[in-house]
Image 1 (cartoon, rainbow, N blue to C red):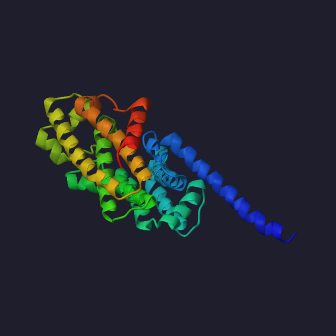
Image 2: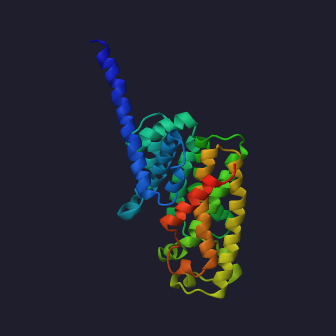
Image 3: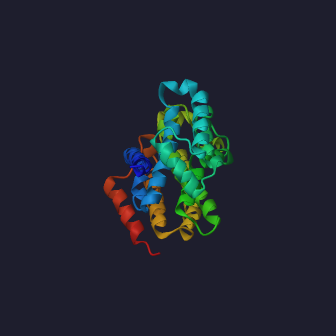
Length: 294
């Protein structure tokens, strides 16, 4: 009789955690249109950890979306307080419930989680970047630092893995910027560095109007080449992480590389709409990642 209450509590907690993990899975499957194809190749525990990390990053972004954007400083302060509590094991929702365990198990630094929030804040306070170095700093906060945390979850043999993960995150984010250039311009955001626009003679009004020019095509080729250099360096991470994690990374990066290839072939398209891959194209990338030699 005395053993029942002691046994019931852990069972209840385990069921609650499983429900939180399922929530993270469902949230990621619904929201991560490209990354999910890579996530599913991971072992169960790593997959759940990545779902929680993705969910956290997406929640931070959603916290300042919509009409409440006017109150974004307070919203981001709440997110910073939320992650500090999470680091101490105090959670308030299914995503932070799972994330609290992830932080402890994989030794995720608090500073890297907070950097994601800093990136969202930068996105709300800056609409122009003068140089590639300025843009690189933004890309680090919104993408590269997440790559670092993913590698911590995967496990790695050499600290060089963290640097290569940064390069890959930068490559993905620069590809995003090229893909979404028209959509961002219509919202008043020009991410491409002003020094690059000036170098190739592309004006902001041309981005907003969506009128392709020879100058625009040369600019796209230049930025695509920069992204390719980052992809080449970033793929070095595959040497330092386990096989299934490498499949995950290669699938996610491969999807974005295919998007970059489409942009290179049709540089005018980003001024008209968003370049994407079909489900069958993503499936081919995933299969190719599994078939890669070790």
